[in-house]
Amino acid sequence: MDIREMINVIWIVMAAGVIFVLPSTIYTAMFFGIFYRHKPLYLDRDDLTGTHYLPYQKELGEIIREAKGLECRAVSIRSRDKLVLAGRYYDRGADTTVVLVHGYQSDSFNNFSSLLKYFLSQGRNVLMIDQRAHGQSGGRFTTTGCKEQYDVMDWVAWLDQHTDCSSIFLYGISMGATTIGLASDKIKSPKVKGLIMEAGFTSFYEELNACVGRVFMRQAALNYIVLCAKHLLHADIKKSTVQALGATAIPVLFLHGESDSEVDLMHTRMNFDACASEKSLLIVEGAGHTLCHFIGQERVENAIGEFIATHQSQKRMNG
Image 1: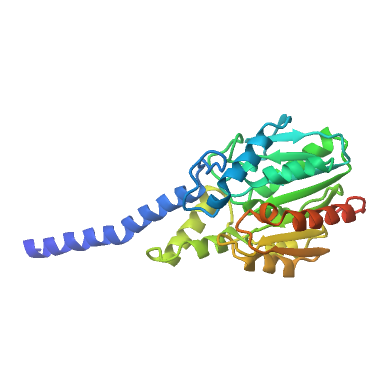
Image 2 (image 1 turned 180 degrees about the vertical axis):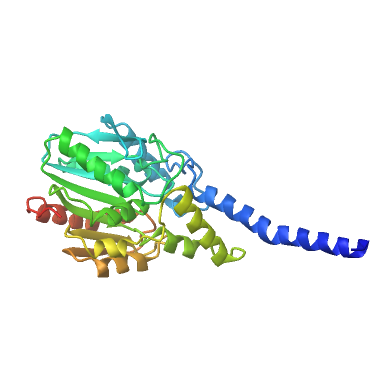
Protein backbone atom coordinates (compact mmCIF):
# COMPACT_ATOMS: atom_id res chain seq x y z
CA MET A 1 0.00 0.00 0.00
CA ASP A 2 1.52 3.32 -1.03
CA ILE A 3 1.28 6.55 0.94
CA ARG A 4 -1.69 7.83 -1.07
CA GLU A 5 -3.71 4.68 -0.35
CA MET A 6 -2.81 4.92 3.33
CA ILE A 7 -4.05 8.53 3.43
CA ASN A 8 -7.30 7.48 1.75
CA VAL A 9 -7.81 4.73 4.36
CA ILE A 10 -7.16 7.21 7.18
CA TRP A 11 -9.71 9.62 5.71
CA ILE A 12 -12.29 6.82 5.44
CA VAL A 13 -11.71 5.79 9.07
CA MET A 14 -11.97 9.38 10.26
CA ALA A 15 -15.16 9.92 8.25
CA ALA A 16 -16.66 6.74 9.71
CA GLY A 17 -15.82 8.01 13.18
CA VAL A 18 -17.61 11.29 12.53
CA ILE A 19 -20.62 9.51 11.02
CA PHE A 20 -21.07 7.05 13.88
CA VAL A 21 -19.42 8.52 16.98
CA LEU A 22 -20.57 12.14 16.74
CA PRO A 23 -24.31 11.38 16.45
CA SER A 24 -24.17 8.86 19.29
CA THR A 25 -22.42 11.45 21.47
CA ILE A 26 -25.11 13.99 20.69
CA TYR A 27 -27.89 11.48 21.33
CA THR A 28 -26.33 10.41 24.63
CA ALA A 29 -26.26 14.05 25.72
CA MET A 30 -29.93 14.32 24.72
CA PHE A 31 -30.76 11.23 26.77
CA PHE A 32 -29.16 12.66 29.91
CA GLY A 33 -30.72 16.05 29.28
CA ILE A 34 -34.17 14.46 29.07
CA PHE A 35 -34.07 11.94 31.91
CA TYR A 36 -31.50 13.19 34.43
CA ARG A 37 -32.73 15.07 37.52
CA HIS A 38 -33.23 18.78 36.83
CA LYS A 39 -33.94 21.77 38.98
CA PRO A 40 -37.47 22.82 37.99
CA LEU A 41 -38.60 26.26 37.00
CA TYR A 42 -40.05 27.66 40.24
CA LEU A 43 -43.11 29.70 39.39
CA ASP A 44 -42.96 31.69 42.63
CA ARG A 45 -39.37 32.93 42.35
CA ASP A 46 -37.80 32.35 38.91
CA ASP A 47 -37.98 34.57 35.82
CA LEU A 48 -40.91 33.33 33.76
CA THR A 49 -40.04 35.33 30.64
CA GLY A 50 -40.70 33.28 27.52
CA THR A 51 -43.16 30.93 29.22
CA HIS A 52 -46.95 30.83 29.10
CA TYR A 53 -46.94 31.47 32.87
CA LEU A 54 -45.55 35.03 32.53
CA PRO A 55 -48.92 36.85 32.38
CA TYR A 56 -49.93 35.22 35.67
CA GLN A 57 -46.57 35.43 37.48
CA LYS A 58 -47.67 37.67 40.35
CA GLU A 59 -50.86 35.78 41.14
CA LEU A 60 -49.22 32.35 40.80
CA GLY A 61 -46.42 33.47 43.12
CA GLU A 62 -48.89 34.56 45.78
CA ILE A 63 -50.86 31.31 45.55
CA ILE A 64 -47.70 29.18 45.78
CA ARG A 65 -46.26 31.10 48.72
CA GLU A 66 -49.57 30.75 50.57
CA ALA A 67 -49.63 26.99 49.87
CA LYS A 68 -46.06 26.56 51.14
CA GLY A 69 -47.13 28.10 54.45
CA LEU A 70 -49.87 25.54 55.12
CA GLU A 71 -49.28 23.06 57.94
CA CYS A 72 -48.52 19.50 56.87
CA ARG A 73 -46.60 16.39 57.92
CA ALA A 74 -43.53 15.22 56.03
CA VAL A 75 -43.89 11.55 55.10
CA SER A 76 -41.85 9.08 53.08
CA ILE A 77 -41.89 5.59 51.62
CA ARG A 78 -39.28 3.35 50.02
CA SER A 79 -39.81 2.47 46.37
CA ARG A 80 -39.56 -1.04 45.00
CA ASP A 81 -36.07 -0.23 43.76
CA LYS A 82 -35.05 1.17 47.16
CA LEU A 83 -35.39 4.93 46.59
CA VAL A 84 -36.67 7.12 49.40
CA LEU A 85 -39.70 9.00 48.10
CA ALA A 86 -40.98 12.10 49.89
CA GLY A 87 -44.44 13.53 50.36
CA ARG A 88 -46.48 16.00 52.41
CA TYR A 89 -49.63 14.86 54.14
CA TYR A 90 -52.34 17.39 54.97
CA ASP A 91 -54.55 15.60 57.48
CA ARG A 92 -58.06 16.98 57.92
CA GLY A 93 -59.43 13.84 59.56
CA ALA A 94 -61.59 13.19 56.50
CA ASP A 95 -62.79 9.94 54.95
CA THR A 96 -61.52 11.06 51.53
CA THR A 97 -57.91 11.67 50.53
CA VAL A 98 -56.70 13.18 47.27
CA VAL A 99 -53.21 12.22 46.06
CA LEU A 100 -51.58 14.93 43.93
CA VAL A 101 -49.05 13.73 41.34
CA HIS A 102 -47.04 16.48 39.63
CA GLY A 103 -45.54 16.70 36.16
CA TYR A 104 -42.19 16.38 34.39
CA GLN A 105 -39.40 18.64 35.67
CA SER A 106 -41.88 20.43 37.90
CA ASP A 107 -43.03 20.16 41.49
CA SER A 108 -46.25 19.85 43.43
CA PHE A 109 -46.46 23.49 44.44
CA ASN A 110 -46.06 24.61 40.82
CA ASN A 111 -48.84 22.33 39.64
CA PHE A 112 -51.21 22.11 42.58
CA SER A 113 -51.09 25.11 44.92
CA SER A 114 -54.50 26.46 43.96
CA LEU A 115 -56.00 22.95 43.94
CA LEU A 116 -54.44 22.18 47.33
CA LYS A 117 -56.29 25.15 48.80
CA TYR A 118 -59.52 24.00 47.13
CA PHE A 119 -59.34 20.40 48.37
CA LEU A 120 -58.50 21.47 51.92
CA SER A 121 -61.37 23.98 51.89
CA GLN A 122 -63.66 21.06 51.02
CA GLY A 123 -62.43 19.15 54.09
CA ARG A 124 -60.41 16.57 52.13
CA ASN A 125 -57.12 15.11 53.23
CA VAL A 126 -54.34 15.68 50.69
CA LEU A 127 -51.18 13.70 50.03
CA MET A 128 -48.86 15.75 47.82
CA ILE A 129 -45.93 13.66 46.57
CA ASP A 130 -42.56 14.35 44.99
CA GLN A 131 -42.03 12.01 42.07
CA ARG A 132 -38.69 10.16 41.86
CA ALA A 133 -35.79 12.38 40.74
CA HIS A 134 -37.85 15.44 41.70
CA GLY A 135 -38.00 17.58 44.83
CA GLN A 136 -37.10 15.80 48.06
CA SER A 137 -37.43 12.31 46.57
CA GLY A 138 -34.41 10.20 45.70
CA GLY A 139 -33.26 9.06 42.29
CA ARG A 140 -31.09 10.52 39.57
CA PHE A 141 -33.36 9.67 36.64
CA THR A 142 -37.04 10.05 35.91
CA THR A 143 -38.67 7.22 33.97
CA THR A 144 -41.55 9.47 32.83
CA GLY A 145 -44.27 7.30 34.38
CA CYS A 146 -42.90 3.79 33.79
CA LYS A 147 -41.63 3.18 37.33
CA GLU A 148 -43.54 6.09 38.82
CA GLN A 149 -46.81 4.21 38.31
CA TYR A 150 -45.66 1.66 40.89
CA ASP A 151 -44.52 4.46 43.22
CA VAL A 152 -48.07 5.83 43.17
CA MET A 153 -49.47 2.39 43.94
CA ASP A 154 -47.08 2.21 46.92
CA TRP A 155 -48.30 5.60 48.12
CA VAL A 156 -51.84 4.21 47.99
CA ALA A 157 -50.65 1.29 50.12
CA TRP A 158 -49.12 3.78 52.58
CA LEU A 159 -52.47 5.57 52.91
CA ASP A 160 -54.18 2.22 53.43
CA GLN A 161 -51.77 1.29 56.21
CA HIS A 162 -51.30 4.62 57.98
CA THR A 163 -54.64 6.44 57.69
CA ASP A 164 -58.33 5.72 58.23
CA CYS A 165 -59.56 7.18 54.94
CA SER A 166 -62.08 5.05 53.10
CA SER A 167 -61.84 6.63 49.63
CA ILE A 168 -58.85 7.79 47.61
CA PHE A 169 -58.73 9.88 44.45
CA LEU A 170 -55.57 10.27 42.37
CA TYR A 171 -55.06 13.58 40.56
CA GLY A 172 -52.20 13.76 38.05
CA ILE A 173 -51.07 16.66 35.89
CA SER A 174 -49.05 16.19 32.68
CA MET A 175 -46.53 13.40 33.40
CA GLY A 176 -48.41 12.86 36.66
CA ALA A 177 -51.55 12.13 34.66
CA THR A 178 -49.60 9.69 32.50
CA THR A 179 -48.27 8.06 35.68
CA ILE A 180 -51.71 7.34 37.10
CA GLY A 181 -53.02 6.44 33.64
CA LEU A 182 -50.34 3.76 33.28
CA ALA A 183 -51.26 2.46 36.74
CA SER A 184 -55.00 2.51 36.08
CA ASP A 185 -55.29 -1.16 35.14
CA LYS A 186 -53.03 -2.36 37.97
CA ILE A 187 -54.47 -0.57 41.01
CA LYS A 188 -56.14 -3.20 43.17
CA SER A 189 -57.14 -1.21 46.25
CA PRO A 190 -60.93 -0.82 46.35
CA LYS A 191 -60.37 2.46 48.20
CA VAL A 192 -59.24 4.12 44.97
CA LYS A 193 -62.57 5.48 43.72
CA GLY A 194 -61.47 7.74 40.88
CA LEU A 195 -58.69 9.23 38.77
CA ILE A 196 -58.42 12.84 37.60
CA MET A 197 -56.11 13.17 34.61
CA GLU A 198 -55.17 16.66 33.46
CA ALA A 199 -53.15 17.18 30.26
CA GLY A 200 -51.56 13.74 30.26
CA PHE A 201 -49.67 12.40 27.26
CA THR A 202 -50.43 8.88 26.03
CA SER A 203 -46.76 7.88 26.16
CA PHE A 204 -43.52 9.75 26.67
CA TYR A 205 -42.35 8.49 23.29
CA GLU A 206 -45.27 10.18 21.54
CA GLU A 207 -44.71 13.40 23.48
CA LEU A 208 -40.99 13.29 22.70
CA ASN A 209 -41.73 12.59 19.05
CA ALA A 210 -43.77 15.79 18.91
CA CYS A 211 -41.09 17.84 20.69
CA VAL A 212 -37.82 16.89 18.98
CA GLY A 213 -38.71 18.76 15.79
CA ARG A 214 -36.01 18.69 13.15
CA VAL A 215 -33.25 17.08 15.19
CA PHE A 216 -30.42 15.67 13.07
CA MET A 217 -31.34 12.11 12.04
CA ARG A 218 -34.57 12.45 14.04
CA GLN A 219 -35.76 8.84 13.94
CA ALA A 220 -32.28 7.57 14.77
CA ALA A 221 -32.23 9.90 17.79
CA LEU A 222 -35.61 8.64 19.00
CA ASN A 223 -34.58 5.00 18.53
CA TYR A 224 -31.35 5.62 20.45
CA ILE A 225 -33.20 7.27 23.34
CA VAL A 226 -35.75 4.43 23.49
CA LEU A 227 -32.89 1.92 23.58
CA CYS A 228 -31.03 3.79 26.33
CA ALA A 229 -34.19 4.11 28.42
CA LYS A 230 -34.88 0.41 28.06
CA HIS A 231 -31.39 -0.83 28.95
CA LEU A 232 -30.16 1.86 31.35
CA LEU A 233 -33.40 2.80 33.13
CA HIS A 234 -35.35 -0.44 32.50
CA ALA A 235 -38.20 1.73 31.24
CA ASP A 236 -40.31 1.27 28.12
CA ILE A 237 -41.17 4.85 27.19
CA LYS A 238 -43.40 3.58 24.37
CA LYS A 239 -45.77 2.09 26.94
CA SER A 240 -49.11 3.81 26.45
CA THR A 241 -51.89 4.87 28.77
CA VAL A 242 -54.32 3.92 26.00
CA GLN A 243 -53.87 0.20 26.70
CA ALA A 244 -54.05 0.63 30.48
CA LEU A 245 -57.17 2.80 30.40
CA GLY A 246 -58.77 0.31 28.05
CA ALA A 247 -58.62 -2.24 30.84
CA THR A 248 -59.43 -0.10 33.89
CA ALA A 249 -62.55 -0.24 36.04
CA ILE A 250 -61.76 3.01 37.88
CA PRO A 251 -63.83 6.06 36.89
CA VAL A 252 -61.83 8.85 35.25
CA LEU A 253 -62.34 12.60 34.91
CA PHE A 254 -60.25 14.01 32.05
CA LEU A 255 -59.24 17.68 31.96
CA HIS A 256 -57.28 19.58 29.33
CA GLY A 257 -56.63 23.20 28.48
CA GLU A 258 -57.81 24.22 25.02
CA SER A 259 -54.73 26.44 24.62
CA ASP A 260 -52.20 23.83 25.80
CA SER A 261 -49.14 24.15 23.55
CA GLU A 262 -47.00 21.58 25.41
CA VAL A 263 -49.21 18.48 25.42
CA ASP A 264 -51.60 18.34 22.50
CA LEU A 265 -55.30 17.94 23.30
CA MET A 266 -55.20 14.89 21.00
CA HIS A 267 -53.58 12.88 23.83
CA THR A 268 -56.50 13.43 26.20
CA ARG A 269 -59.03 12.70 23.46
CA MET A 270 -57.26 9.40 22.72
CA ASN A 271 -57.21 8.51 26.42
CA PHE A 272 -60.87 9.42 26.79
CA ASP A 273 -61.91 7.36 23.78
CA ALA A 274 -59.92 4.33 25.01
CA CYS A 275 -61.10 4.47 28.63
CA ALA A 276 -63.30 1.47 29.49
CA SER A 277 -64.68 2.80 32.79
CA GLU A 278 -67.12 5.58 33.65
CA LYS A 279 -65.62 8.76 32.26
CA SER A 280 -66.16 12.45 31.67
CA LEU A 281 -64.21 15.16 29.86
CA LEU A 282 -63.85 18.89 30.48
CA ILE A 283 -61.92 21.10 28.06
CA VAL A 284 -61.09 24.48 29.59
CA GLU A 285 -61.15 27.32 27.07
CA GLY A 286 -58.15 29.63 27.21
CA ALA A 287 -56.15 27.44 29.58
CA GLY A 288 -52.52 26.67 28.83
CA HIS A 289 -50.57 23.68 30.11
CA THR A 290 -51.31 22.85 33.81
CA LEU A 291 -53.55 25.92 34.16
CA CYS A 292 -57.02 24.40 33.96
CA HIS A 293 -57.95 25.24 37.55
CA PHE A 294 -56.24 28.63 37.51
CA ILE A 295 -58.11 29.74 34.36
CA GLY A 296 -61.39 27.85 34.68
CA GLN A 297 -61.72 27.68 38.46
CA GLU A 298 -65.49 27.52 38.79
CA ARG A 299 -66.04 24.97 36.00
CA VAL A 300 -63.14 22.80 37.16
CA GLU A 301 -64.23 22.85 40.81
CA ASN A 302 -67.80 21.99 39.83
CA ALA A 303 -66.58 19.07 37.70
CA ILE A 304 -64.23 17.79 40.40
CA GLY A 305 -66.81 18.25 43.16
CA GLU A 306 -69.44 16.35 41.22
CA PHE A 307 -66.96 13.60 40.30
CA ILE A 308 -65.88 13.02 43.90
CA ALA A 309 -69.42 13.23 45.25
CA THR A 310 -70.60 10.68 42.69
CA HIS A 311 -67.89 8.10 43.27
CA GLN A 312 -66.54 8.44 46.80
CA SER A 313 -69.14 6.11 48.32
CA GLN A 314 -69.36 3.65 45.46
CA LYS A 315 -67.98 0.17 45.96
CA ARG A 316 -65.44 -1.02 43.42
CA MET A 317 -64.60 -4.64 42.86
CA ASN A 318 -60.95 -5.64 43.32
CA GLY A 319 -59.13 -6.07 40.02
